[in-house]
Image (cartoon, rainbow, N blue to C red; front, side, top):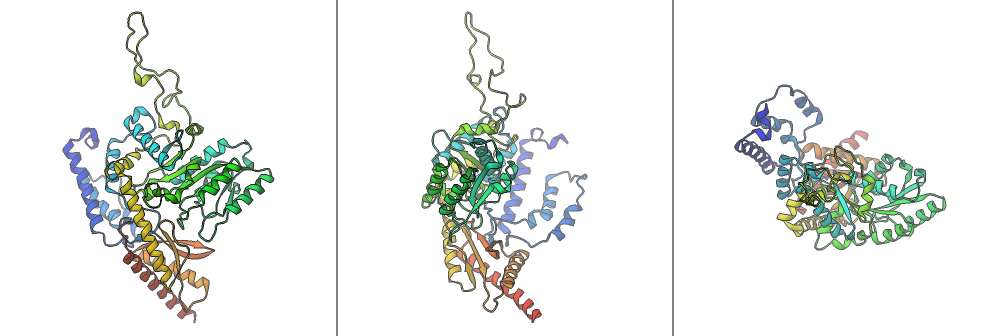
Length: 500
Protein backbone atom coordinates (compact mmCIF):
# COMPACT_ATOMS: atom_id res chain seq x y z
CA UNK A 1 0.00 0.00 0.00
CA UNK A 2 3.02 2.29 0.14
CA UNK A 3 2.38 3.26 -3.47
CA UNK A 4 -0.45 5.50 -2.23
CA UNK A 5 2.00 7.68 -0.31
CA UNK A 6 2.82 10.90 -2.10
CA UNK A 7 6.56 10.36 -1.99
CA UNK A 8 6.23 6.89 -3.53
CA UNK A 9 4.06 7.75 -6.54
CA UNK A 10 5.29 9.16 -9.81
CA UNK A 11 4.63 12.74 -10.74
CA UNK A 12 2.35 11.51 -13.51
CA UNK A 13 0.19 9.33 -11.26
CA UNK A 14 -0.14 12.16 -8.77
CA UNK A 15 -1.07 14.60 -11.51
CA UNK A 16 -3.63 12.18 -12.95
CA UNK A 17 -5.29 11.51 -9.60
CA UNK A 18 -5.56 15.19 -8.64
CA UNK A 19 -6.70 16.20 -12.13
CA UNK A 20 -9.48 13.64 -12.12
CA UNK A 21 -10.72 14.84 -8.75
CA UNK A 22 -10.64 18.48 -9.81
CA UNK A 23 -12.44 17.70 -13.05
CA UNK A 24 -15.20 15.86 -11.22
CA UNK A 25 -15.80 18.80 -8.90
CA UNK A 26 -15.53 21.37 -11.71
CA UNK A 27 -18.09 19.48 -13.79
CA UNK A 28 -20.40 19.20 -10.83
CA UNK A 29 -20.11 22.95 -10.12
CA UNK A 30 -20.79 23.75 -13.78
CA UNK A 31 -23.84 21.50 -14.12
CA UNK A 32 -25.54 21.88 -10.75
CA UNK A 33 -28.95 23.40 -11.44
CA UNK A 34 -30.02 23.82 -7.83
CA UNK A 35 -28.12 24.61 -4.64
CA UNK A 36 -29.39 21.38 -3.09
CA UNK A 37 -31.09 18.16 -4.21
CA UNK A 38 -33.50 18.12 -1.28
CA UNK A 39 -32.27 14.75 -0.02
CA UNK A 40 -33.17 14.02 3.60
CA UNK A 41 -30.88 12.62 6.28
CA UNK A 42 -33.12 9.55 6.48
CA UNK A 43 -32.58 8.90 2.78
CA UNK A 44 -28.83 9.47 2.70
CA UNK A 45 -27.76 7.89 5.99
CA UNK A 46 -28.40 4.26 4.93
CA UNK A 47 -26.37 4.76 1.76
CA UNK A 48 -23.34 5.91 3.72
CA UNK A 49 -23.84 3.36 6.51
CA UNK A 50 -23.82 0.52 3.94
CA UNK A 51 -20.26 1.30 2.84
CA UNK A 52 -17.70 -1.13 4.25
CA UNK A 53 -14.69 0.98 5.16
CA UNK A 54 -12.63 -2.18 5.68
CA UNK A 55 -12.99 -3.05 1.99
CA UNK A 56 -11.04 -0.42 0.00
CA UNK A 57 -11.87 0.20 -3.64
CA UNK A 58 -8.21 0.24 -4.63
CA UNK A 59 -8.12 3.26 -6.94
CA UNK A 60 -9.13 6.89 -7.01
CA UNK A 61 -11.54 6.60 -9.94
CA UNK A 62 -13.70 4.06 -8.16
CA UNK A 63 -13.63 6.12 -4.97
CA UNK A 64 -14.69 9.22 -6.92
CA UNK A 65 -17.54 7.28 -8.52
CA UNK A 66 -18.72 6.33 -5.06
CA UNK A 67 -18.26 9.88 -3.80
CA UNK A 68 -20.80 11.07 -6.35
CA UNK A 69 -23.55 9.13 -4.59
CA UNK A 70 -22.53 9.84 -0.99
CA UNK A 71 -21.48 13.49 -1.24
CA UNK A 72 -21.06 15.39 -4.48
CA UNK A 73 -24.55 14.78 -5.85
CA UNK A 74 -26.26 15.94 -2.65
CA UNK A 75 -23.84 18.57 -1.33
CA UNK A 76 -25.16 22.04 -0.54
CA UNK A 77 -23.45 24.26 -3.11
CA UNK A 78 -22.66 27.73 -1.83
CA UNK A 79 -21.57 28.84 -5.31
CA UNK A 80 -25.14 28.58 -6.62
CA UNK A 81 -26.80 32.02 -7.00
CA UNK A 82 -29.87 30.85 -5.08
CA UNK A 83 -27.94 29.72 -2.04
CA UNK A 84 -28.96 32.60 0.25
CA UNK A 85 -28.61 30.88 3.61
CA UNK A 86 -25.83 31.14 6.13
CA UNK A 87 -22.59 33.12 6.17
CA UNK A 88 -20.97 30.82 3.62
CA UNK A 89 -19.31 32.15 0.51
CA UNK A 90 -18.35 30.84 -2.90
CA UNK A 91 -14.57 30.73 -3.12
CA UNK A 92 -12.22 32.44 -5.53
CA UNK A 93 -10.10 30.21 -7.77
CA UNK A 94 -6.67 31.41 -6.54
CA UNK A 95 -7.65 30.27 -3.04
CA UNK A 96 -8.56 26.82 -4.38
CA UNK A 97 -5.10 26.66 -5.92
CA UNK A 98 -3.60 27.57 -2.55
CA UNK A 99 -5.72 24.87 -0.88
CA UNK A 100 -4.41 22.22 -3.26
CA UNK A 101 -0.79 23.22 -2.68
CA UNK A 102 -1.00 23.46 1.12
CA UNK A 103 -2.76 20.09 1.37
CA UNK A 104 -0.15 18.35 -0.77
CA UNK A 105 2.87 19.81 1.02
CA UNK A 106 1.09 19.48 4.41
CA UNK A 107 3.13 22.05 6.32
CA UNK A 108 2.29 22.51 9.97
CA UNK A 109 2.40 26.11 11.06
CA UNK A 110 3.26 25.51 14.70
CA UNK A 111 7.06 25.67 14.46
CA UNK A 112 9.61 27.07 12.06
CA UNK A 113 11.21 23.68 11.50
CA UNK A 114 7.88 22.38 10.16
CA UNK A 115 6.98 25.29 7.91
CA UNK A 116 9.87 27.68 7.18
CA UNK A 117 8.56 30.06 4.51
CA UNK A 118 4.98 29.28 5.52
CA UNK A 119 5.68 30.92 8.88
CA UNK A 120 6.89 34.10 7.20
CA UNK A 121 3.98 34.18 4.75
CA UNK A 122 1.49 33.94 7.61
CA UNK A 123 3.30 36.68 9.54
CA UNK A 124 3.35 38.89 6.46
CA UNK A 125 -0.42 38.50 6.04
CA UNK A 126 -0.99 39.28 9.72
CA UNK A 127 1.07 42.46 9.31
CA UNK A 128 -0.88 43.34 6.15
CA UNK A 129 -4.23 42.90 7.90
CA UNK A 130 -3.13 44.77 11.03
CA UNK A 131 -2.06 47.73 8.89
CA UNK A 132 -5.40 47.75 7.10
CA UNK A 133 -7.11 47.84 10.48
CA UNK A 134 -4.72 50.52 11.75
CA UNK A 135 -3.57 48.76 14.92
CA UNK A 136 -0.10 50.30 14.98
CA UNK A 137 3.53 49.12 14.83
CA UNK A 138 3.35 46.75 17.84
CA UNK A 139 0.45 44.76 16.41
CA UNK A 140 0.57 41.02 15.85
CA UNK A 141 -1.77 38.08 15.50
CA UNK A 142 -2.19 34.52 14.32
CA UNK A 143 -4.43 32.55 11.98
CA UNK A 144 -7.20 30.50 13.60
CA UNK A 145 -9.83 27.95 12.63
CA UNK A 146 -12.66 30.49 12.66
CA UNK A 147 -14.37 33.37 14.40
CA UNK A 148 -15.33 31.34 17.45
CA UNK A 149 -11.70 30.48 18.16
CA UNK A 150 -10.59 34.03 17.41
CA UNK A 151 -13.14 35.44 19.85
CA UNK A 152 -12.15 32.90 22.49
CA UNK A 153 -8.48 33.81 22.23
CA UNK A 154 -9.21 37.54 22.31
CA UNK A 155 -11.26 37.17 25.49
CA UNK A 156 -8.60 34.94 27.02
CA UNK A 157 -6.13 37.79 26.56
CA UNK A 158 -8.67 40.24 27.97
CA UNK A 159 -9.13 38.06 31.04
CA UNK A 160 -5.39 37.86 31.63
CA UNK A 161 -5.02 41.63 31.19
CA UNK A 162 -7.87 42.41 33.60
CA UNK A 163 -7.09 44.25 36.81
CA UNK A 164 -8.29 41.50 39.14
CA UNK A 165 -7.64 37.83 39.69
CA UNK A 166 -11.15 37.33 41.06
CA UNK A 167 -12.90 35.80 38.05
CA UNK A 168 -16.30 36.17 39.69
CA UNK A 169 -16.01 39.95 39.40
CA UNK A 170 -15.22 40.07 35.67
CA UNK A 171 -17.86 41.23 33.22
CA UNK A 172 -18.04 41.26 29.41
CA UNK A 173 -20.32 43.83 27.75
CA UNK A 174 -21.66 43.08 24.28
CA UNK A 175 -24.64 43.74 22.04
CA UNK A 176 -27.69 41.53 22.45
CA UNK A 177 -27.21 40.76 18.74
CA UNK A 178 -23.58 39.66 19.06
CA UNK A 179 -22.35 36.17 18.18
CA UNK A 180 -23.10 33.32 20.59
CA UNK A 181 -19.38 32.59 20.83
CA UNK A 182 -19.07 35.46 23.32
CA UNK A 183 -21.22 33.52 25.80
CA UNK A 184 -19.46 30.27 24.93
CA UNK A 185 -16.06 31.89 25.49
CA UNK A 186 -17.14 33.21 28.88
CA UNK A 187 -18.09 29.69 29.92
CA UNK A 188 -14.88 28.13 28.61
CA UNK A 189 -12.82 30.79 30.38
CA UNK A 190 -14.38 29.96 33.73
CA UNK A 191 -16.43 33.15 33.94
CA UNK A 192 -19.87 31.70 33.40
CA UNK A 193 -22.66 32.97 31.19
CA UNK A 194 -23.73 35.45 33.84
CA UNK A 195 -20.47 37.30 33.21
CA UNK A 196 -21.82 38.47 29.84
CA UNK A 197 -23.90 41.65 30.05
CA UNK A 198 -26.14 42.05 26.98
CA UNK A 199 -26.57 45.62 25.81
CA UNK A 200 -29.80 46.63 24.02
CA UNK A 201 -29.68 47.63 20.36
CA UNK A 202 -31.34 50.47 18.47
CA UNK A 203 -33.80 50.13 15.60
CA UNK A 204 -30.89 49.43 13.24
CA UNK A 205 -29.69 46.59 15.52
CA UNK A 206 -26.58 48.50 16.65
CA UNK A 207 -25.43 48.58 20.25
CA UNK A 208 -26.89 51.54 22.17
CA UNK A 209 -23.91 53.36 23.63
CA UNK A 210 -26.10 55.19 26.15
CA UNK A 211 -27.16 51.81 27.52
CA UNK A 212 -23.56 50.61 27.45
CA UNK A 213 -22.41 53.63 29.45
CA UNK A 214 -25.16 53.06 32.00
CA UNK A 215 -24.29 49.37 32.43
CA UNK A 216 -20.57 50.07 32.74
CA UNK A 217 -21.26 52.64 35.45
CA UNK A 218 -23.73 50.42 37.30
CA UNK A 219 -21.53 47.32 37.32
CA UNK A 220 -18.55 49.35 38.42
CA UNK A 221 -20.53 50.79 41.34
CA UNK A 222 -21.40 47.23 42.31
CA UNK A 223 -17.70 46.42 42.62
CA UNK A 224 -17.55 44.41 39.39
CA UNK A 225 -14.73 44.76 36.85
CA UNK A 226 -15.38 45.60 33.19
CA UNK A 227 -13.08 43.02 31.62
CA UNK A 228 -14.01 43.61 27.98
CA UNK A 229 -16.40 45.38 25.68
CA UNK A 230 -17.11 43.34 22.54
CA UNK A 231 -18.29 45.39 19.58
CA UNK A 232 -19.59 43.68 16.47
CA UNK A 233 -18.72 44.80 12.95
CA UNK A 234 -21.31 42.79 11.08
CA UNK A 235 -23.80 40.90 13.23
CA UNK A 236 -24.73 37.43 11.99
CA UNK A 237 -28.42 38.19 11.62
CA UNK A 238 -28.46 41.79 10.44
CA UNK A 239 -24.96 42.71 9.28
CA UNK A 240 -25.17 45.69 11.63
CA UNK A 241 -22.01 47.51 12.72
CA UNK A 242 -21.86 48.85 16.26
CA UNK A 243 -20.75 52.50 16.77
CA UNK A 244 -17.06 51.71 17.13
CA UNK A 245 -15.64 55.18 18.01
CA UNK A 246 -18.08 55.71 20.88
CA UNK A 247 -17.56 52.18 22.18
CA UNK A 248 -13.78 52.65 22.08
CA UNK A 249 -14.11 55.82 24.14
CA UNK A 250 -16.23 54.09 26.79
CA UNK A 251 -13.96 51.05 26.94
CA UNK A 252 -10.97 53.32 27.47
CA UNK A 253 -12.78 55.30 30.15
CA UNK A 254 -13.38 52.14 32.20
CA UNK A 255 -10.08 50.44 31.41
CA UNK A 256 -11.82 47.58 29.58
CA UNK A 257 -10.31 45.59 26.76
CA UNK A 258 -12.02 46.48 23.47
CA UNK A 259 -12.56 43.58 21.13
CA UNK A 260 -14.15 43.97 17.70
CA UNK A 261 -15.74 40.89 16.18
CA UNK A 262 -15.36 41.71 12.50
CA UNK A 263 -15.69 38.11 11.34
CA UNK A 264 -18.32 39.19 8.82
CA UNK A 265 -17.48 42.85 8.23
CA UNK A 266 -13.75 42.36 7.65
CA UNK A 267 -14.34 42.45 3.89
CA UNK A 268 -14.75 46.20 4.31
CA UNK A 269 -10.99 46.37 4.89
CA UNK A 270 -10.61 45.82 1.14
CA UNK A 271 -13.60 47.89 0.02
CA UNK A 272 -13.02 50.96 -2.10
CA UNK A 273 -16.39 52.48 -1.17
CA UNK A 274 -17.35 51.27 2.33
CA UNK A 275 -14.13 51.21 4.38
CA UNK A 276 -15.44 54.14 6.43
CA UNK A 277 -18.03 51.86 8.01
CA UNK A 278 -15.18 50.40 10.08
CA UNK A 279 -13.96 53.76 11.37
CA UNK A 280 -13.01 53.34 15.01
CA UNK A 281 -11.80 49.76 14.63
CA UNK A 282 -8.25 51.08 14.85
CA UNK A 283 -8.82 51.71 18.58
CA UNK A 284 -9.46 48.04 19.32
CA UNK A 285 -7.20 45.94 21.52
CA UNK A 286 -8.10 42.88 19.44
CA UNK A 287 -10.00 42.13 16.24
CA UNK A 288 -11.49 38.95 14.78
CA UNK A 289 -11.47 38.57 11.00
CA UNK A 290 -12.91 35.67 8.99
CA UNK A 291 -11.36 35.60 5.55
CA UNK A 292 -13.62 32.61 4.81
CA UNK A 293 -16.62 34.92 4.84
CA UNK A 294 -16.14 38.26 3.12
CA UNK A 295 -12.71 37.56 1.58
CA UNK A 296 -14.20 34.59 -0.32
CA UNK A 297 -11.76 32.02 1.05
CA UNK A 298 -12.36 28.31 1.66
CA UNK A 299 -13.01 27.21 5.22
CA UNK A 300 -11.03 27.53 7.34
CA UNK A 301 -9.32 30.91 7.19
CA UNK A 302 -9.62 33.27 10.15
CA UNK A 303 -7.32 35.32 12.35
CA UNK A 304 -7.18 37.21 15.61
CA UNK A 305 -5.21 40.47 15.59
CA UNK A 306 -3.98 42.37 18.65
CA UNK A 307 -2.76 45.92 19.14
CA UNK A 308 0.09 44.82 21.42
CA UNK A 309 1.78 41.66 20.26
CA UNK A 310 3.23 41.12 23.74
CA UNK A 311 -0.25 40.17 25.00
CA UNK A 312 -0.15 37.03 22.87
CA UNK A 313 2.31 35.63 25.42
CA UNK A 314 -0.72 34.77 27.56
CA UNK A 315 -1.23 31.87 25.15
CA UNK A 316 2.41 30.77 25.18
CA UNK A 317 3.47 27.42 26.58
CA UNK A 318 6.81 25.72 26.03
CA UNK A 319 7.66 22.09 25.44
CA UNK A 320 11.19 20.77 25.04
CA UNK A 321 10.11 18.59 22.11
CA UNK A 322 8.47 21.46 20.24
CA UNK A 323 9.31 25.04 21.16
CA UNK A 324 11.86 25.09 24.00
CA UNK A 325 12.40 28.36 25.80
CA UNK A 326 14.63 30.71 23.78
CA UNK A 327 17.92 30.24 25.58
CA UNK A 328 20.74 28.72 23.54
CA UNK A 329 19.65 27.20 20.27
CA UNK A 330 21.04 23.71 19.80
CA UNK A 331 22.93 23.06 16.61
CA UNK A 332 26.22 21.94 15.16
CA UNK A 333 28.35 25.07 15.05
CA UNK A 334 31.31 25.34 12.70
CA UNK A 335 34.71 24.90 14.36
CA UNK A 336 36.28 27.97 15.87
CA UNK A 337 38.85 29.88 13.90
CA UNK A 338 42.31 29.94 15.52
CA UNK A 339 42.23 32.26 18.51
CA UNK A 340 38.53 33.09 18.27
CA UNK A 341 34.97 31.95 18.93
CA UNK A 342 33.13 29.98 16.26
CA UNK A 343 30.93 32.02 13.97
CA UNK A 344 27.20 31.69 14.71
CA UNK A 345 24.96 31.13 11.69
CA UNK A 346 22.22 33.72 11.36
CA UNK A 347 19.45 31.20 12.01
CA UNK A 348 20.93 30.42 15.42
CA UNK A 349 21.45 33.96 16.65
CA UNK A 350 17.91 34.32 17.94
CA UNK A 351 14.97 32.17 18.88
CA UNK A 352 13.05 30.48 16.10
CA UNK A 353 9.86 32.26 14.90
CA UNK A 354 7.46 29.64 16.21
CA UNK A 355 3.80 30.48 15.60
CA UNK A 356 2.70 28.00 18.27
CA UNK A 357 3.90 30.60 20.77
CA UNK A 358 0.90 32.73 19.74
CA UNK A 359 -1.77 30.14 19.08
CA UNK A 360 -4.30 28.09 21.02
CA UNK A 361 -3.67 25.31 18.51
CA UNK A 362 -0.56 23.19 18.08
CA UNK A 363 -0.67 21.43 14.72
CA UNK A 364 -2.18 23.97 12.36
CA UNK A 365 -2.83 24.07 8.63
CA UNK A 366 -1.12 26.58 6.35
CA UNK A 367 -4.46 28.30 5.70
CA UNK A 368 -2.70 31.60 5.13
CA UNK A 369 -1.52 30.35 1.74
CA UNK A 370 -5.05 30.62 0.34
CA UNK A 371 -5.25 34.32 1.13
CA UNK A 372 -1.68 34.82 -0.07
CA UNK A 373 -2.48 33.32 -3.48
CA UNK A 374 -5.67 35.35 -3.68
CA UNK A 375 -3.89 38.64 -3.03
CA UNK A 376 -1.03 37.78 -5.40
CA UNK A 377 -3.46 36.98 -8.24
CA UNK A 378 -6.43 39.30 -7.64
CA UNK A 379 -5.16 41.92 -5.23
CA UNK A 380 -7.09 43.45 -2.37
CA UNK A 381 -9.07 45.64 -4.76
CA UNK A 382 -10.38 42.53 -6.51
CA UNK A 383 -11.60 41.06 -3.23
CA UNK A 384 -13.10 44.38 -2.13
CA UNK A 385 -14.96 44.73 -5.39
CA UNK A 386 -16.63 41.35 -4.87
CA UNK A 387 -17.75 42.32 -1.37
CA UNK A 388 -19.00 45.70 -2.58
CA UNK A 389 -21.08 43.88 -5.20
CA UNK A 390 -22.91 41.73 -2.65
CA UNK A 391 -23.48 44.77 -0.42
CA UNK A 392 -24.94 46.60 -3.41
CA UNK A 393 -27.12 43.57 -4.11
CA UNK A 394 -28.43 43.61 -0.55
CA UNK A 395 -29.35 47.29 -0.92
CA UNK A 396 -31.30 46.45 -4.07
CA UNK A 397 -32.90 43.46 -2.35
CA UNK A 398 -34.02 45.68 0.51
CA UNK A 399 -35.79 47.94 -1.96
CA UNK A 400 -37.59 44.91 -3.43
CA UNK A 401 -38.71 43.76 0.01
CA UNK A 402 -39.71 47.23 1.17
CA UNK A 403 -41.90 47.63 -1.92
CA UNK A 404 -43.48 44.16 -1.67
CA UNK A 405 -46.69 44.19 0.42
CA UNK A 406 -46.29 40.47 1.11
CA UNK A 407 -43.22 41.02 3.27
CA UNK A 408 -42.03 42.88 6.33
CA UNK A 409 -38.30 43.67 6.24
CA UNK A 410 -36.57 44.49 9.53
CA UNK A 411 -33.68 46.88 8.82
CA UNK A 412 -31.95 48.48 5.87
CA UNK A 413 -28.67 46.56 5.50
CA UNK A 414 -25.20 47.94 6.15
CA UNK A 415 -23.60 44.80 4.70
CA UNK A 416 -25.23 41.96 2.76
CA UNK A 417 -27.91 40.46 5.02
CA UNK A 418 -31.68 40.88 4.80
CA UNK A 419 -34.10 39.75 7.52
CA UNK A 420 -37.76 39.63 6.54
CA UNK A 421 -41.07 37.86 7.13
CA UNK A 422 -44.00 36.83 4.97
CA UNK A 423 -47.20 38.56 6.10
CA UNK A 424 -50.38 37.16 4.49
CA UNK A 425 -53.34 39.50 4.02
CA UNK A 426 -56.05 37.36 5.55
CA UNK A 427 -54.19 35.98 8.58
CA UNK A 428 -53.83 37.89 11.81
CA UNK A 429 -52.64 35.16 14.15
CA UNK A 430 -48.89 35.72 14.88
CA UNK A 431 -48.51 32.02 15.66
CA UNK A 432 -49.93 30.97 12.29
CA UNK A 433 -47.73 33.51 10.52
CA UNK A 434 -44.72 32.08 12.36
CA UNK A 435 -45.67 28.58 11.29
CA UNK A 436 -46.19 29.65 7.70
CA UNK A 437 -42.73 31.22 7.52
CA UNK A 438 -41.10 28.23 9.17
CA UNK A 439 -42.90 25.85 6.83
CA UNK A 440 -41.95 27.91 3.79
CA UNK A 441 -38.26 27.77 4.71
CA UNK A 442 -38.33 24.00 5.25
CA UNK A 443 -40.36 23.34 2.11
CA UNK A 444 -38.04 25.49 0.04
CA UNK A 445 -35.00 23.60 1.36
CA UNK A 446 -36.67 20.24 0.68
CA UNK A 447 -37.41 21.32 -2.89
CA UNK A 448 -33.75 22.19 -3.47
CA UNK A 449 -34.77 25.25 -5.48
CA UNK A 450 -33.13 27.66 -3.05
CA UNK A 451 -31.71 27.85 0.46
CA UNK A 452 -32.55 30.62 2.92
CA UNK A 453 -31.82 30.94 6.62
CA UNK A 454 -34.12 31.65 9.53
CA UNK A 455 -33.96 33.52 12.81
CA UNK A 456 -36.21 35.14 15.40
CA UNK A 457 -36.84 38.83 15.93
CA UNK A 458 -38.83 39.85 19.00
CA UNK A 459 -39.74 36.20 19.51
CA UNK A 460 -41.31 35.91 16.06
CA UNK A 461 -40.12 33.69 13.19
CA UNK A 462 -38.30 35.51 10.39
CA UNK A 463 -36.39 34.49 7.28
CA UNK A 464 -32.98 35.66 6.18
CA UNK A 465 -31.02 36.19 2.99
CA UNK A 466 -27.28 36.15 3.50
CA UNK A 467 -25.91 37.43 0.21
CA UNK A 468 -22.28 36.49 -0.37
CA UNK A 469 -22.40 35.41 -4.01
CA UNK A 470 -21.66 38.12 -6.59
CA UNK A 471 -23.39 35.92 -9.20
CA UNK A 472 -26.74 36.29 -7.42
CA UNK A 473 -29.05 38.85 -9.07
CA UNK A 474 -32.15 40.76 -8.05
CA UNK A 475 -34.06 38.40 -10.36
CA UNK A 476 -32.89 35.51 -8.19
CA UNK A 477 -34.06 37.33 -5.07
CA UNK A 478 -37.45 38.09 -6.62
CA UNK A 479 -37.87 34.49 -7.74
CA UNK A 480 -37.06 33.14 -4.28
CA UNK A 481 -39.52 35.56 -2.68
CA UNK A 482 -42.23 34.20 -5.00
CA UNK A 483 -41.30 30.62 -4.05
CA UNK A 484 -41.49 31.45 -0.33
CA UNK A 485 -44.87 33.10 -0.74
CA UNK A 486 -46.13 30.08 -2.63
CA UNK A 487 -45.04 27.64 0.08
CA UNK A 488 -46.45 29.84 2.84
CA UNK A 489 -49.80 30.15 1.04
CA UNK A 490 -49.91 26.39 0.56
CA UNK A 491 -49.41 25.86 4.28
CA UNK A 492 -52.02 28.42 5.26
CA UNK A 493 -54.50 27.13 2.71
CA UNK A 494 -54.23 23.57 3.96
CA UNK A 495 -54.17 24.34 7.68
CA UNK A 496 -56.74 27.12 7.86
CA UNK A 497 -59.20 25.03 5.86
CA UNK A 498 -58.73 22.13 8.27
CA UNK A 499 -59.03 24.43 11.26
CA UNK A 500 -62.33 25.84 10.02
